[in-house]
Length: 192
Length: 192
Image (cartoon, rainbow over all chains, first blue to last red):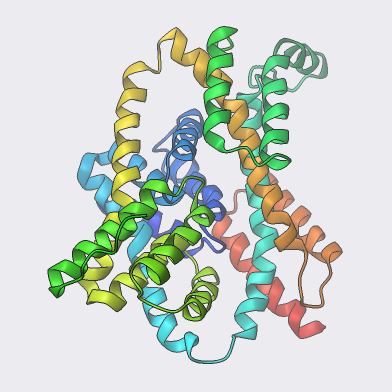
């Protein structure tokens, strides 16, 4: 039953997502694109772009979107419930157990080991999407083809590089970056 | 922000929860971390649900648990103010504005994504998304690599590389890697 699948998938995302919303993006992709095949890689990337342009928590936006795509409003509700209710119960319990006690050294040690994994998983999402986003998907891995593909798609590489500098170095907000990317795409017909 | 809502009676408290977290969900552009200061303002300044010190403690607990931090905090405050209906009210306020918007955008996307102009715009947006994903990974890296615990940055960097290689070249679910990372963190704490 699809509502249960949505609930379980997003509960899994949320329960294994240590380190806040962005750490869950690789988990959402694993469930939605690879696990269940609810979205194509491109559709997921596009949904992530919309999600980044809107306010609010990223995981609840993605779960509402995916749930609605898969099974309408009840689907959106099931996915949202999965993303929020299990960890909500956890924090209500944890606050009673932990907050008044001393800091938990073991939990900190575990999270210390989880954070590098999260960095690796985030890099992997970018790595997996890069060929499609940067116009290399058609190149079959042959070196000459690859070089030719890079030659043709350099505007996409330039947009990626400029956006990276803007977001990391100058902390430019995602919304203007996405708007500028869309405008350049239309102006120079990058989709064809 | 606006004047505190007079929380007279139970229904009044529920309404003030929906409004408080509705403001957070509407103005919190940039994912979870951008919402923390907004939640602090609502909880400490606007509504006086807790002191600054209590908020810091609660944030420490919430950020070491899995799940979206903003929704976990919303669920907690809702519970404190008005029990389970309070939790659900706060979650609804937080999620509804951006959740409804992204589902609406999804409809627009489905209807127009095959047009040439939208294809061009998406081609321009996708490299930006790659940059945003890399940016998230890069902003996570300092916290992930530096640590008060003994295992130094070099060891953590090795963990990033190993996790990336395993995730890239095998089919393991990210959740397993996260559990493995927790195990590594605990093991390293034991060794040093």
